[in-house]
Image 1 (cartoon, rainbow, N blue to C red):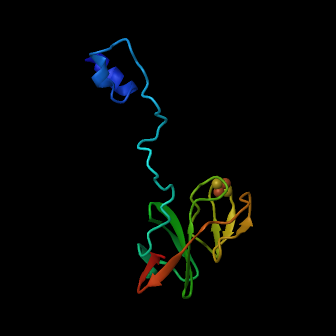
Image 2 (image 1 turned 180 degrees about the horizontal axis):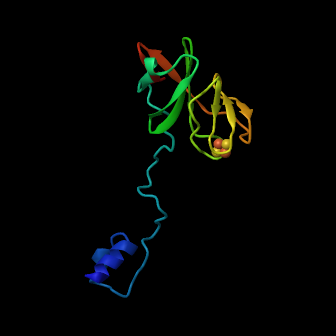
Image 3 (image 1 turned 30 degrees about the vertical axis):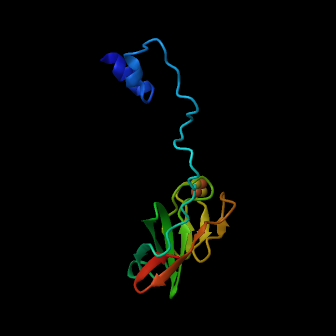
Length: 144
Ligand code: FES
């Protein structure tokens, strides 16, 4: 019983091997943390049409941080212009905050970005936020 638990914790599929060959512990060939081996794309790229946030929830002249498409996005608004950026700070990946006064600030090391285009205003980040294409459909901001 204990053997099965220990082997099951150490080796996936080890329970089957426990009773038949207790002295062997051959690691599964070719396993490095990935499974399958198919050509799985590494980037989802977003799903066009997927709702991100209600337009009425995005303050004019400001913005919000929302969860969409499995990641956090900063959605900014100036009048009828709505933009979105990946909230992951290009410096070290911390989620940036919602814009204030036209500036998006990272709480980790203080990088600042222009809320209108995501460009760096102040380091240590050396590049701007990654834009995420969105569109307004009715009262919804959607991935485009
Ligand atoms: S992680 Fe954002 S400034 Fe360092």
